[in-house]
Length: 370
Image (cartoon, rainbow, N blue to C red):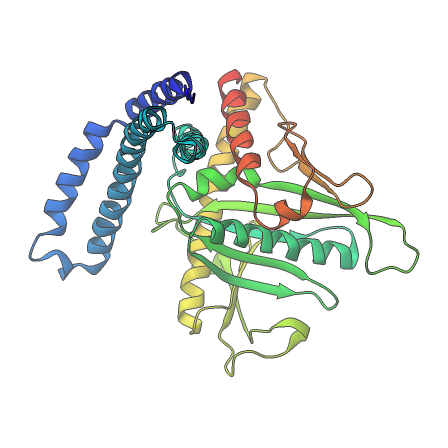
């Protein structure tokens, strides 16, 4: 006789779901949607296209957030009905479906629970990721391209729009650097735990001695600012260089010199953009990223000064944070959280959710301790 009892597991999920709903504040969410819907329905909305875009974008985001919360509640109700049906009909197929749905719901609720930990000032924004190859020659530039593909595959698996903004190809294999944008709710808060130095150890495919090669790449994650007007940059502080976009091997892609490189002279920060259609668009995109980097640097300097005055100096976020071993013991290990995977191929194919969740929880504990 079939006796399927998932009541304890379902009750635990309902408890977590209730906690999440309280943190998200569903009543406030509904109120915000009503207000934004009124604003979006105004006859003169598109008289100011920039303002209209902000209103419609905010409305879409909040509607998606409410739908996700509501869908989970509905699925929990449906799961209990399915379990009752499986027991009543003694149906093994329904029982198997119930167990599969329980596992799927556990994953969804876990991801949503992690998102409730993202309460930073810019956590809800889209993310701009820059990857730079480090020491290691061709292995490092190849590794940088592997990381770029890894994040783009992660975005693809979640159906998040991704847009490559700039790529600097290496003379040999891979890339010197790349900048790309991932647009999703809480993309910055989610992906910011990926920032830091990544290390790859493997038998180099580029050498003839079959020796182990260690190479490095740096990952930078910043939020996409709709407007970074808090930072004003005098024209005299910027050097603007215009050049022709290039693809692998240095081949010209554009017929005009549309790519733009901005150098902020006081800090040495360099931003390049080449994937927009015109020089004006590339310059505007580069300026927005430059302003964002300067704004974040200003905030980081202020935070560091406060810690110095408090006598509490800790290692910077940019220290080595993850190692990828592709020889002998196949392993990817996060050096901060201790989370590891014995399937590097899957990780490089975008299976990053568990690493990201562990990183977010680790950061939250660290912030609470500080």
